[in-house]
Each structure stands twice: as C-alpha cells, then as structure tokens.
Image (cartoon, rainbow, N blue to C red; front, side, top):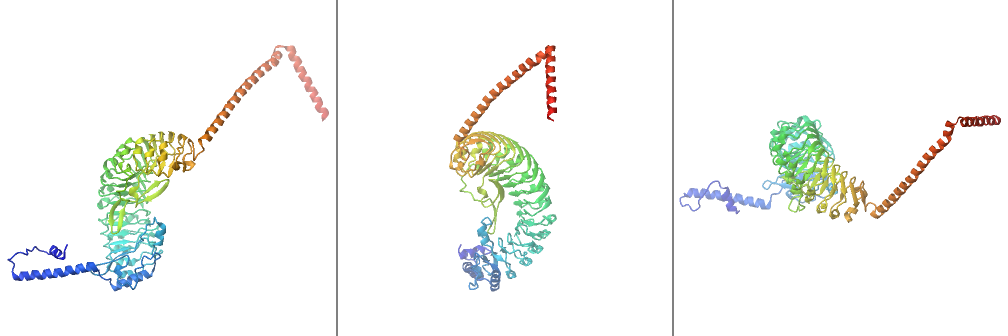
Length: 615
C-alpha cells in the first residue's frame, strides 16, 4: 500500500477528485488536510523504518539490572554502555513512537529437558529495583533463571501496565506477594515454582485480575489456599488454567459454569477428593481436561458428553468406578489422548471406542476390565500410519506472545513414567496391562503400523502371537509378559528394527528364538518363564542334549522302579511263606509248641546266669 493510498484509506469521508462542483474554499481545506495526513504518514514510515532510540533513564535502569546478574552464557553481551540505543539490545523491545521499553524477554532459551544447556544459560543473581524505571513495561518474562531463593519482589506490583508476567521456575522462594493482585491489566500470569519453594495462604487476590486469560501455578504449596480456589470474582475471561501439583485438597468446586471460555483445565497431581463436579460438563469449549493423580471417586458424569471438541482426557490414578462410558466413543470424535489407568473401572472394553479415529494414546492399565479386545481396534486410524512428516511435533492449542500453549501428559513407556509435551503429537501408544482381558490377541492390532508402544502384559491372553507382527515396523516397546500365550515366537518379529524394549516372559511359548541382531540383544529375562531356546538363552543343541540326558535318567529310574517292585514282591512273599512255615506248626502241634517254649526258657536262664557271672 502506498503512502497516498494509506491516507485515502484512513480519511473519514469519500471524495470525488473529478468533481467540478466543489467550491474553492473547500478545495483548500481538503488540500491542507491531505498535506497534513501525508506528513503524518511520512513520519510513520520513517519511524517504522528507522525506529526510535530508547529513553536514557530506562537505558541506565537496564544497565543496573545487568550489573546484579551473572551471565555465564553471555546472553546480555549487547547490553553495554557504549551501545547507546537499548532498543537494539537482546531481549528488549521498545515502542516505535515513544522509545519506551515495552517488553523485556529474559527467559532461559533452553528447555529443562536439555539440563546442561538449561543450567548454563541461567541468569544468576537478584532483581535490581531499577526495574521500576520501566514504567511502560507491558511484557516481563524472567522464567528459567536462578534468583537464588529471593522472594518475588513486591514492587513488581507497581508495574501496573503489565499484561504478561512470567516468573516460572526462576528459583524464587517464600510467600507469593498478594500485591500482584494490583496488576489489573494482566492477561497472562505464570508463577509455577520448583519443588514447592513458593507458598501462599490464599490466592483470593487473583479476583483482582479481571482480564486474566492464562493462569499457570504449579509446584507451589497451596495446601492452605484451597478455600479460595476459583472465587466467584475470578476472571470470567480465563481460557487456560493450570493449577496442578499444588497440594490442593478437599473437593473440586462445582461452579464451572462461570468460566465458559475455558479451553484447557489441569488440576492434576493434587489431593482432591469426592466426585467429579457435574458443572465441568458445561465447559463446551474445553479441549483438554487433566484430573490425573488425585483421590477422586464415583463415576464419570454424563454431563461430560458435552465435550464435543475434547482432544485430551486424563483421569488416571484416581478411584473412579463403573464401566467405561460408551459415549466416549460416540461423542468425542476429536479425542487424541484417553488415559483412564489406575482406577477401579470394570466390565468389557466398549466396542464404541473403536470410533475414535483420531486416537493416538490409549491407556486403561491397572483396572478390572475383562473380555476380549474387539477386532475393530484397527479403526484407530491415527495409529495406523507411520508417516508423521506432515504433522507438528506438539499438540498446539494457542500462542501467547512467543509461547506455545501445548498439551503435556505423562505416559508409562518401557517401564518408566515419562512426561511428553514438545513431541507428544508424534507418540502412538496402547497400554491395557494389568487387567483381566482374555482370548487371543486380535491379528487386527498389526494394522496399527504407526504404533510405538504396545503393552498387553499381566492379562489372560491365550493363543499365539500374531504371525505378521513384524509389519509393525515403528514398534519400540513390546510387552506381552505374564499371559498364557503359546506356540513359537513368530519369525517376522526379527524385522522389528526399532524395537529396544521386549518382554515375553512368563508365558507358555516354546521353540527357538528367531535369529536377529535385535532379538539377540535383549537380556535373557525378556524370555524367562517359557520353554524357549536359542540366544540369549541356552542353545537348542545343548537343550536337546539335556533333554536326552533327562529322558535317559528318567528311563533308568523307571527301570530301577521295576527292579525294586520285584524285590518288594519277593520280600512280601518270602515273609508270608517263612512266617507260616514256622508259626503254622507251632499253632497246630501242642507237643512242638511245648518243646519250643521250653527251649526259649533254657536260653533265657543261660543268658541270666552269664550276666550275673560278668557282674
């Protein structure tokens, strides 16, 4: 758009330049206005191109702030006195017209997952009060640094123009100052701590933040603040709410109809008790609900049917009961993550869940489910393709400034609890372990060729491992342990080149373990409790030799048993014959009986006489 066209676009009335009826004085007036607007547009153009130097007092304030910080990774290298224009310094953004500092982005550029780089890039020290000189600041991000256990400065509440404040994981300690409630323009607030070093006795001051849209408070001890959770004056504009891992207790408030704009809600890893509030079902804009690891009981409310655009549901590690609702499969067509693990659900696996074509993660482990796995499991089409080249690595809900609002969840993979966020959208997993499922493993599961983790352990599955399991080329973790599977390990399993965790122990498998670099790399415990041979177990030749020796030994023992049986029969017959040959005549002939007992008496007298002579 040209400067002249810009003037016309903002001019408040329409004008026909070819009109011959306009009076001369009006032409002069319009001409002057056009000249003035042209001059303003020229100044705007120059300002946008050349920028405006920062205010001297604000430059000095930034230098004082730097003076109190150690910067081992030289993130503030551009902050030098000789470089007069602080608007060009790293992490500083100024207004184009005024030159005032509007944004200060000093967040750690690395994720905590990259621990070495994260630690090395921390700014270390304290926050200089000179920060108050930045009176026009609207955006302040100090997250991921090390402020060495100081309290969150109360004077931050004087920066009344702030709309964005992020102090998360910056190693603050002590009480969260209630004065932050004076920041009435805040739209984004993140006070997430580290290992509960922060605490608060009340968070009722949040009611003063009426424009708040994003609130994230995690790893803060709020055990004494449960009574003030989500007061009735809490911002009606809230869209993203994360209050996980804060030692909250008692019941979840049943007043969620007051926040109809909520898109993500995370109350996980607390001590909430009681049933799930029915009013949560009024949150029809909800895309993610995380209530994991509490002590919630009862059934999943039918009001949850209203979550028509829900993408992630995690109610794992609670005490929920009943059967898995069939309407989850009927109403949640966009669901990507379903985690119900470690509850008290019972009954069959609902066939309606097969309608969840977008499902990428299914975890119903550690329940009391039974029956067979429906063959329609291959309808999980999001798990059926291994090609994720056209997908983003995360599940993105929104942007807030430079920050992404993404889904995060914890999964048990390869025997360990792992938290995923930045690559969650690339994960495909099924875990139905520790239930009472029976029948054969449906061959249709092999159609899920994008699956990376499959855990069917500790159930009652019978029959053979599907012969074509080798087509699941993306599999990295496979656990079929503690079932009643029989037959041989399919030869095709040697094609699973990405497999790095395998457990087939405690089944009824037999035969030789297929030969492949991958399978032979596993520990013998992966195959224990079966009738298998071959590396990493003993070779089948050795086993056959042992079997032959055992059979010979058993044969010899059986031969010995026949000899012993003959001996026992002979002894019995000898005893019977000898006994009656001797005792029979004594019983039938009185004279022989008298002679025999007289003989015994004589022997007895001689024995007594002999003993007396010796003593």
